[in-house]
Length: 236
Length: 236
DNA sequence: AAGTGGTCTAGACCACCCC
DNA sequence: GGGTGGTCTAGACCACTTT
Image: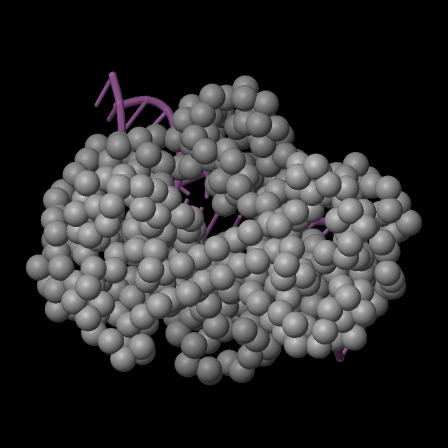
């Protein structure tokens, strides 16, 4: 099915903002002007603007207008998940090995995360990420079939997943949320592929990637503790 | 001005969910049923439901319904900002000293954060937090006057700020966002009150508290590094 | 007074789920 | 086919800002 109208308007305005057609802090066209321009009702315009606000592209002031945010950093978006970029920057070579992939049914937990029905199809992709040939992290990614039909899993050895999202599926990333915490390695897969012992500490990173209001990617990564270390102490 | 209708419906449904009138994973009344129940249009119901989803209370599945989330943790909400609770749990005594407070005008940065006009009034409250009498962190809090008229600053020595929010202003917390990073101590205030040297490392925690879609509290805390320590290394 | 965003209505059609 | 959420319309009134 086609993208919703408000989604296209979101994409359009987002491009205009990123192309710096508008300066930071500048007022964009009023909602009533945008109604005319796109020939839609105000509700539709406001829905697009709402998501632009949520994703940090604009802020609103009642009685004045909608303004371009002065900080268009897209902060976290490239922090951990562009593994390849990070490693490249460090002058090392990132590689990736496809361990397994399958189509699976949505269980209740995944149903809640993606907001789709139990039993819906999901791709489950497991990959080992290496740095200069040494295992660094094990990633398990879930993406819904309804959004990524015929996902070219085989290309993953050559192309970054986010490139595929962008090129083949025209995904406009809106935001990503990451949580991470240290856990004890337990699964055989972790122990085998990361070459560690049972109960060694690994860092679990859980990432949800959103397209507007919907989760379109859910990934759990286990990172070797000597690659990524994280500590919080409350020394009370 | 009165709370919007959708805001009241949000509060109401939220209470029902938290009181476990609905079980986790259970379907709540359909949108059309809720229309009748509250005597409002579907748009209004959907606006309330939208924020409930955003704040993690429900999830939606098209064609099926709206369901109560199985994880009602409210995770981060009490992590750092309930300083008093944390310290109490550790068997130590938290105290708080009011350093200064004033009414100030909104500059462009704060205008963007709160989504209100430049020149609008804000309370600026600076407090020193101590553990067993030792300085631990310095907090600068901004809250907008339009939402917190006649804020009883003097009570802060006896009552927690979030208690005042709840009791006097009927705030229903929706969510909070926190970012933290290590910085070098530079301001005279930090150095003086935290009893540290210039360029010592402190942890800066920036918190935005949201009520539905609006920021209603913005706080910058500087924490002594021996109280709170945080490290991230990417050893590439 | 005019313009802007915020809220709300009453109704419509679509896409998806379940029977 | 009937129920559910998702999108969209055309219009209204309110609250706030600016002229």
